[in-house]
Image: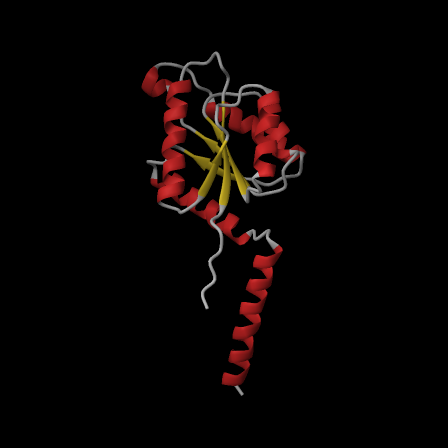
Length: 185
């Protein structure tokens, strides 16, 4: 008998400020991350369809993630953004979070993006809500970022929410425990 578990479902949202340059680059980099999650890590990505700029859009994002029953959420800081976006999402979801920041795009494009400034502020918001997060830095081309997102996905895989899946895991564990007891008698 083989058991097929559903794929891990990761919510993905790109947080930006609309007037900062670098938005196009942020969208391009977020697309690369989503492709990596789906193709390399076998994750089902529930992407919020547009970059989030306002609190009302952040509300739409968390409501979609809740309706889609995501196992975890990646908050991708494509550019600087306001803390109210992060606060709106994390206060309404109870799941593992990854806070993803980029190096300063100004080195490449001469435009200030402020991604890491937003990440530092978001860290204090997580602290104020007493929520934990995984920090990921860099583009998906960076080996360190790939390792961190891989660890995050594995954490999400351990967060089994469906009671029927928990029963299957428990039954499997009990089966092997009985076999081991017989073997070691």
